[in-house]
Amino acid sequence: MLFDKLDGVVARYEEIGGALMDPGVTGDQARYRDLMKEYKHLTPIVEKYREYEKARTDAEEARALMEESGLEKDFREMVQSEYAENTEKMERFGEELKILLLPSDPNDEKNVIVEIRGGAGGEESALFAGSLMRMYTMYAEMRGWKTEILNANETELGGFKEVSFSIEGEGAYSRLKYESGVHRVQRVPETESQGRIHTSTSTVAVLPEVEDVEIDIDPGDLQIDTYRASGAGGQHVNKTESAIRITYLPTGLVVECQDERSQYKNKDKAMKILRSRLYEQKLQEQNDAIASQRRLQVGTGDRSERIRTYNFPQGRVTDHRIGLTLYKIEQIMNGELEELIDALITFDQAEKLKEQAQG
Image (cartoon, rainbow, N blue to C red; front, side, top):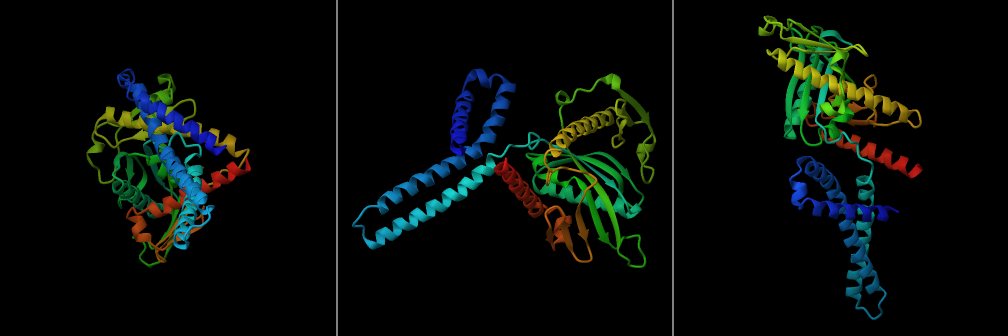
């Protein structure tokens, strides 16, 4: 059954390859873009399938030779080794193909909007929100992604009551979607004179960035207010009514943006955040419907769930969803998130394979 599906994938891949050479397609930008996206998605599957087929052919040839009589001992041993090696490759490539054929999240290639809010712990939680923002922006920089602040409500000590920023780059959502939830920190705050360890939290939400066409917003459903921005230290933002507050009347959802001097730029950024939040609400409703039939594992993005603890005195970071503890807190806070994220992706894939086998 797996190979029936793969033969169909190869046929579609070759069909798209031919279409991409057609001047009628190259002249139609929207169609060309859609086909290129599908071609890019199918490429790793087809390449892995071809590797599997080569290993299968080589294994069959080696087995046919082994069945012949009168082979010299050294040659027979070489053929047996080749058969074993290619059989192992087939098994490995087969497992990799199962993962590649898992239904993909349609949002995986999207850019993201990350929202971080200080939670329990007062000023220390705001400082931790700043630490998390630095961690994600450093991770983005390591991957060659572009970041932009959308809105920031800074505290006197340089933390954030809340901060929103966009991350633009290939596969940003596919890697950062597991970061939504409550992040807990245990450390001696800068504001603590007695050297006592405090526990505080910050909440992270990772939203896929969406286009206007994906979320239809009726302008009549919006209440848009302008006000003077407030910020720590009384910067230029206080002098003009450039800050924007948008209220989505059907649900009462409020989005604010005061990061830019320009009212128009703030409105654009606020609308970007609003679209992503409304899209996330729609996704959450769909996920809730699925979760009523089966419990979702990693990747639900439940913001009320405590997902990770950063313990500075012990130098450890623990992800509670998969029971992973790493003693490299300094590197992680400096943006080295690959090991954590790779482990979350592997766990998520294993759960989906398990569900597929049971289904």
